[in-house]
Image (tube, rainbow, N blue to C red):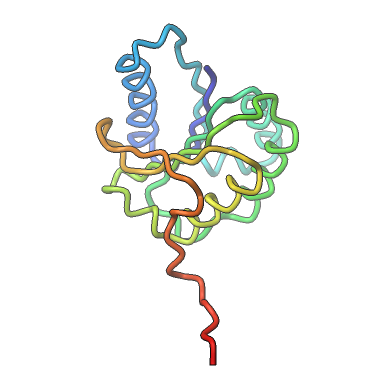
Length: 153
C-alpha cells in the first residue's frame, strides 16, 4: 500500500507515519505501507510539485498531517485536482490528522478536503493523531456549520 503524507511539522508527519504502521499491525495486514513524506511548502514549490505528483499517482491514501492551516492554499487544491485526474488507485482515501484532538475537522480546509473527496469518489478519514481515535465517515456527516442555509419566509 502506498501513501503520501503532506505535513507542516516533522513531528506530526512521524506520528502520522506511525499511525499507518500501527493500523496495519492491528489489522494483521500482510501489506506494508510505502510512505512518501512531503513538507507542504516544498510540495508547492517549483519542480517539487511534479515530483510529489509522481510520488502520489499510485497512492492508496493522501494524508494531511497539518496542525495549523486557516485556509487551504489554492496551489494545494490545484495539485489535488491534478492528482485526482491522474491517480492509478481509484478507491483512494484522503485522511486529515492535526494532532490536536481532531479540531481540524471543523475548519474550512477540512470542509474543502471533504468536498474534494466527495466530488472525486474518495474515502475520507479524519481525527487526531492518537492511534485509537480515527474514524471513517461519509461526506454527508461532516458538519457544515460555516455554510449559510437559506431560511424559508
